[in-house]
Length: 331
Ligand code: 13P
Image 1 (tube, rainbow, N blue to C red):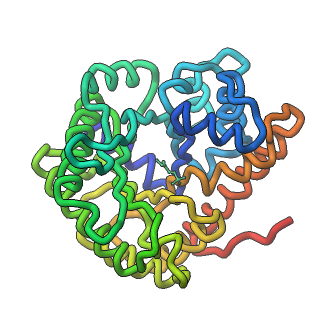
Image 2 (tube, rainbow, N blue to C red):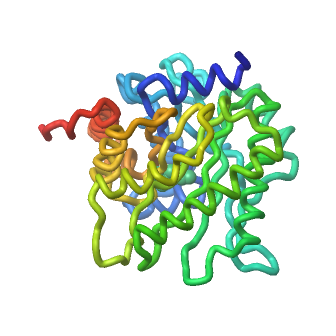
């Protein structure tokens, strides 16, 4: 088995999920500020150590995604983040895209970061990263996304995935259809299917080995301004339906949470498990795992245990969801 296939198996076939703690510096600063925490490098570091150092995290989390800054920072005890995460029984990963920007001539968001990517990937691998992530976003509107935006983002995702595998890093391929809007669940399903078809075509064209790759899609949900909220069963059915087009050899699917309340993301994940699929369906949540931890910590060293307990509770709930168990009772 190739290195990427082995690592992908560890990441998504061990009954665990992935923690996304890879907010860019600007996004992290916004979230710290909103929580009343000064947006400094030290606080970004302390917050990521709070998350990664949560006791027992490796029982429910197989890998943690960081951004460039965190990958180069150290735990208070002097270990680099990648060293500490390996020692704690998880795989460190790295977000390698440089963000989504309005594309000249188009106006829609296209993700950047391909320039110099192979050299950056080699450096990240040397720093200890074992997997990578690239996110493309798609806005739903009456005439959006355009075919050109689909193609531009899909091609970048596939070029990135091929470069990651050449560097020995498992690519997490993240095409995210955003929830902003009044659209129905059916419209989200239609656009998600179109996005996946474009990505699939480019992955084949760039000879990406799907057995050494993880797909990180949105769940199929209604827009955040839609009047009716779909049930977990409806979300699961629509999502699995769209995913049926994926090749059997794909290592696994790890969903983003996309701004859903943590309990809803978990309930949807639990409902997915009632469907039989050739690949595992697990989580790679950001906000649905870390928001409660940030709210509990609020920058105070004495509240680190409370922040860790909040993260551990969400991880335990998603661990249970993967096993078809309900949300554990609140204590
Ligand atoms: P959310 O779960 O907060 O959507 O974040 C996942 C992620 O990795 C975004 O790139």
